[in-house]
Image (tube, rainbow, N blue to C red; front, side, top):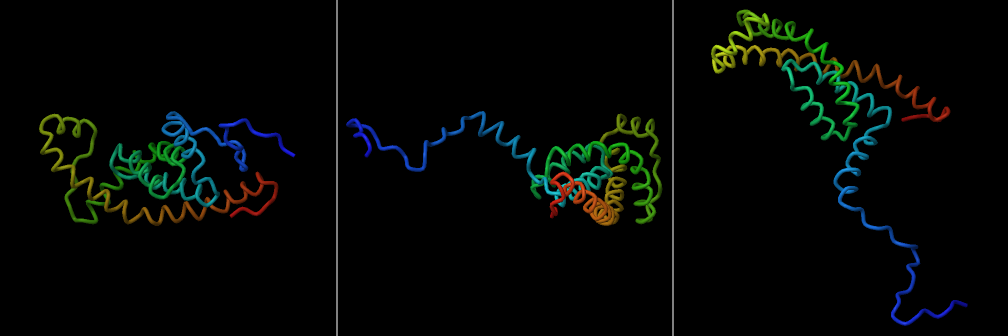
Length: 180
């Protein structure tokens, strides 16, 4: 038998005590950070995240990798910290591939080669910014064309190379249980 409740009190919730509503900090800061750190952490999603981070990290326009990686991770619900770290780590490779992308784009489109030395680029930029953008903007577009032709192959090769490795690692971490 239960003891009588004092008048004016509500009966206890049969589901148990209710949890307090999360505060502003939890809703706006801690929750989204926790979600980004734990989002997309299956072996297959990590393989896709790494492959996309590398592929987008070599995009032939300096400074664009961070934005491209962020948009891709957000749209595909991949792990932001992993894709951003991967995109950042591929920066030296991006620098090495800029001139091959640009020269291949010139060759593919039949455009004449333009000088790509750092002193010439800086000098032309500070002489006349609109002219610089017209001259070198098309070089960038041609580089993007070559990147667009090669990116699907790079992405596919990286993904299918990384996926079995990450699945094995996940199985080991789970004590031998099969990982998807």
